[in-house]
Length: 317
Image (tube, helix red, strand yellow):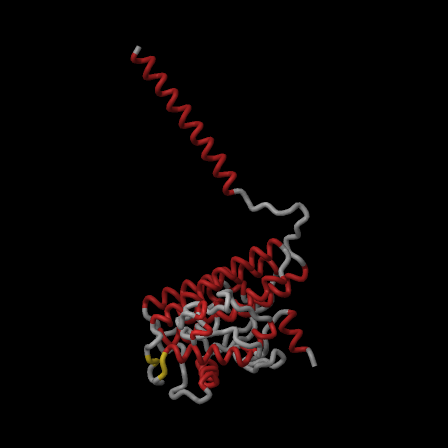
C-alpha cells in the first residue's frame, strides 16, 4: 500500500511539474512575443530616412570624442566599417581621466557605436564627415561663450572636470534634435529606433549634468570661474547661435526657469511644463558649425555635416 501511495505521489508531482512548466511557457510566450502593428503599417517611410540619417553626424561626433577621450583611439579601430571611408577626426586624443570618469566615458563611447550601427543598418548611412575635436577648437568655443579668451586656452583633455565640461557641449544637442525629429517620423521601425536613441541620449545628458551639478560651486582651475558659470555660458552661446529663444539652460537657473518656478537647481534642462526642448536641423547646424548659419560650415564640422539635409543647406545660394 505504501508503494502505491508513493507511486501516486510521484505521478502527481510529475503532472504538476509538467503543467506548471506548460503554463510558464505559455505566459512567457505571450508576454515576450514581438510587438504587434496594424496590418497596413509601414516600417520605414521614405521621408523618414533623411531625417534619421541627419542624426548620424552628431552620433559620429559623440562616438569619436568619447572613444578617443576614454581609450586613446576611435571608431577607425573599434568599428571601422561604420566610418565608411570618412576622414579621421582632427586633434582627438586621450583625456587625463580619473577611474570613475573614464568608465563613464568609455561606456558612452561604446553606446555611440551601437547607435551608429542601429542607424546605418536601418536607414543607411554616409561616410563620417571631417570633424575637429582638437583642444584648439574647444578653446575657441569656450572663448566665444565667455566673450573673452581664457588663459591658458581651455583644454577638454586636461583633466576629468574639463572633459565633462567639454562633454556638456555634445549629447544635449543630439537629444533635443531627436525630440525635434520625433513628430516628423512615421514608420514604426524608425519610430522605435528614434525612441531607443532618444532614451539613451537623454540618459547620457543626465549623467553629465548630474556630474557637473554635484560640482556646481567648484572653481575650474585656473580660470576662477565656477562649473555653474561654465555651463551657463555654453548654454547661452548655443541659444545665441541657434537664434530660436531659450532651449538650453545651465545647471543653475533663475526661479522663473526652474521646475514650476520653484527651483534654482536645474539638473535636467526642460521647458515650463518640464518637457524636453526641441530643435530643428537648421538650429543644430548653426550650433555645431559655431557660425550661427546652417549654410556656413565650421566648428566641429570644418567642411560641413553629411547627408541630404546638411548638404542641401550648403548648396543653397
